Image (cartoon, rainbow, N blue to C red; front, side):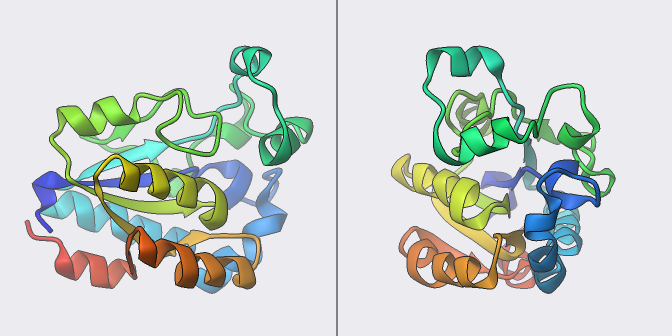
Length: 199
């Protein structure tokens, strides 16, 4: 996998999920700990940058205007009802460990599960001539899976970094890792991925 053709997409490494006091933290903190999600995501981003791959941050920011025109149900409604990911709040900020660095890209517009929906992600990867999409983040069985499916459908080579993701439980994590993601591409550890990545 050539680094110049590869984008690492980091989904929702925000205080809401990753830090004590975040509205959604209690639901994922055990899995973050078990997986080493944040430590591995930092290693992923740093290793990708060193070899010349693009790093793209994909934060969720609740969009009142979007949901005036689109009926809100299910998990996104639960996020809204819980007042999470509100623009201008501490919870919506990308965590300190993964603040964007020079050369990184930050996607705007993400307010649903898929990183491509209603965002500039596809424009970013097309302009950079990206062929390989590498994904880490939250939740494995929602935004990571949804973004992976769309990337697959758009013809990108998909890799999910399993130890840089987290779900609400090991059962959910394992199901997606074992039953869904292998049908869309590779499911690797951060070390396995960095070994494959060619500078």
